[in-house]
Image 1 (cartoon, one colour):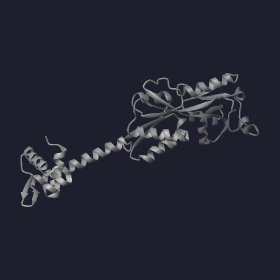
Image 2 (cartoon, rainbow, N blue to C red):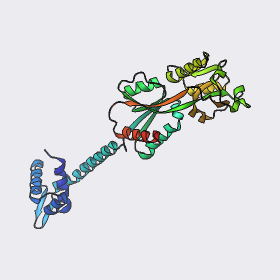
Image 3 (cartoon, rainbow, N blue to C red):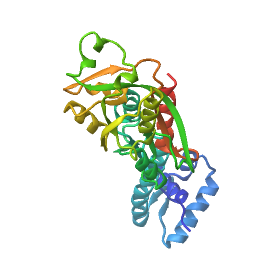
Length: 302
């Protein structure tokens, strides 16, 4: 059976024009190299080199073999280097998911930019969806990693890493009494929202945020009147801007600066925080995923 080393031997002998010099280049002794060339000629079934008084030269068949061997060896070297680059996380693909609220947190955008800057050859695919759908996509191998907000119910086979806890804000129509004057400069106690109509992110999409808001309202002495449930947090803001009610959102979403909305901080006594979690399948990460996790760990630890 012809092996890659036989092709490398033939190329070296052809390029050096001398068995001894080729052996020195290959780091082997001359007699074994001569034996390997003779064995290669026997397998091919025709002479590959013509012996000269001071060296060798390839026959016509030898020139054909060496020409094709160079192409094969180049492709093998490229394949090996591509595999090494993938192992180092410099090539390959990475599928990242995130909830609509997580997408606006600066830490998430910094991490995605970090993998793009450090490994521009990695093909990134991004997916925005609900926590439930993102977890399902992880289980189905459609995603490699996901940024989620809610506690994960189907955590079997997954690694869930808490990254941070983010404050929540009240999103009000900009003409609301709590958004203007001296009241608009103060933190809002949750009890001040008892008579308001709430617009919330639909529970199946984000049970953690939804349940946390409901529980905090109950702790403040009232049951919130939920007038609308929207499939995306961006949709809740559109409804707030239309004057249909108020909402409570993660602080990072105020970066949107949506027209018609005023953002106000809640009283510090209000136990409302939005977690940011990283979910991935269990096991030792490799390739681009391993590189991305190192970036996450470095940025989250700053």
